[in-house]
Amino acid sequence: MRSLSIGSTRLSRSDKTPPRRIFASSTPVMDPASKGLGSDSRVSTVVDVDLGNRSYPIYIGSGLLNEPDLLQRHVVGKRVLVVTNTTVAPLYLEKVTEALTFGNPNVSVESVILPDGERYKNMETLMKVFDKAIETRLDRRCTFVALGGGVIGDMCGFAAASFLRGVSFIQIPTTLMAQVDSSVGGKTGINHPLGKNLIGAFYQPQCVLIDTDTLNTLPDRELASGIAEVVKYGLIRDAEFFEWQEKNIQALLTRDPSALAYAIKRSCENKAEVVSLDEKESGLRATLNLGHTYFMVTPLLSEPEQPVCLIVPLILSIHRNTFYYNFMLITIADLFQAIENGFGYGQWLHGEAVAAGTVMAVDMSYRLGWIDHSIADRVLRILQQANLPTAPPEIMTVDKFKSIMAVDKKVADGLLRLILLKGPLGSCVFTGDYDKKALDETLRAFCKS
Image (cartoon, rainbow, N blue to C red; front, side):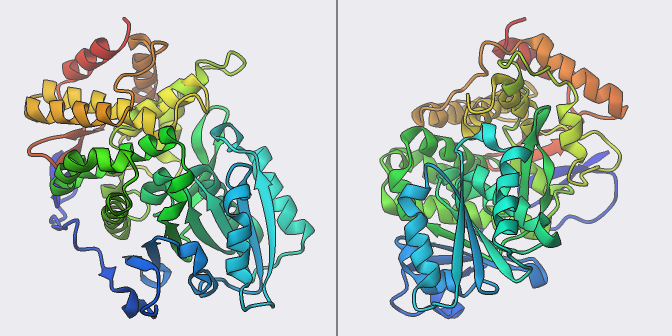
C-alpha cells in the first residue's frame, strides 16, 4: 500500500497509476459574456463542472433571481415543479415563479412546500414531492427546481433522479452550506432511521444558480455552519485560500458581499474540480469528507425510540458504489456523521459537526507527527472565531466511537482508512497506514472514557 499524490492531496491506492497533478485554479472560471450573458447580467462568475455531456454551469452573483433568462435557458419542457420548504417559500418562491414565467406564458409552475429541517429528510416527506408530480400529471419533459438549503437540494435531486426514471432539475441553493458544497456534484438522497444519506443517487443538475443575496436572510448559526465547509477546502487542497480565510473571517461573519462572493467562488472552483476528476467518489472526492468521519454517530443517541446503529459507517462506505479496492472506507466524515446521527437530526447543524470532526482529525494528524503544531492552532483558532463547536457533545464516549469502528473492521475484515492532514498546509492523505495509538489518544482527549 502506498500513497498517491494528486495535487496537494495524497490517496492510498494499491495500483500503479501515475499521479495526475491538479491545481485549485484549473477549473474553468468563465467570463459571463462567453456563456452568452449580456453585459448587463448580474452574473459575476461562472464555474463549469466538466463532466462531458453532463457538464453544467454554476452561476454566482448578486440578484440572480431577478434575471429570468438564467433559469429559463435551463428549463426542459413547459412544466416546472419547484420544491421548497416552509422557511424559504415565503421569502423566494414568488420571485422564482416570476423568473420562470416572465415573458414565457407557456411555462406552468407547480410548487410543493415541505416542512423545514433535517428530521424531515426521509421517505415520507419525499413522497409529498412524488404525490405533487403525479397529481399534476407531470411527464418526462418537465423540470424540478430545488429552492432551499442542503436538505431541499438533496431531496429534490433524488426525486428528479427517481421520477419517471429521471427528469431534469435545477439547483437554487439559499444557504452558504448548500452554495459551497451540497448543491455541486450531484449527490442526492434521503436519511434512514439507521443513518444519514443511506438512500440516494448521483444525479447532476442542469445548472446551479447561486444568488448571494439569499444569504441576507440566513440565520447567523446557518452562516457559520457553511463557513466550516469553506475552511475544509483550504485545509485539504488550497493553502492560499485558507490564508485568505484567516484574514477575512470577520468579513465573512459580518456578511461582507465581496468576501462572501469570493469564498463561494473559490469553494465552487475546488468542488467542481474534484467532482470533474472523481464524480462518484472512487478516491479523490473522498477527501472532501475531511471532518465528517468523526461526525456520523450522534443523532441517534438522543432519541431513545431509535436504536444506536453500529453499522452506519459500513453502509455509508458502500451505498454509492464506493468499495475502494475491497477495503473498508471510513472517512473522517463518517465518524462524526455518527455524532450527527446519534445526537438527533436537527440538534447539530451539518457544519457544526464537521467543525468538531475537523479539530479531531487535525489533532490526530499532529499526534502522528504529520503536521506542525502551528497548523493545529490555526485550525482551532479560525473555527472558534466562526463560533463553531470544536469538540463532540458530552454524550459521545470513547467506547461509543470504538464500538462503531470495531464493528466496521469486523464486518469488512479490512482496513480502517482516514483522511488526515500531512505535510504543509493544504495537503492531506487518504490512508490506513497510521499508528492506531494516535487515534486512541485523540478519542481519549475529546471524549469521556
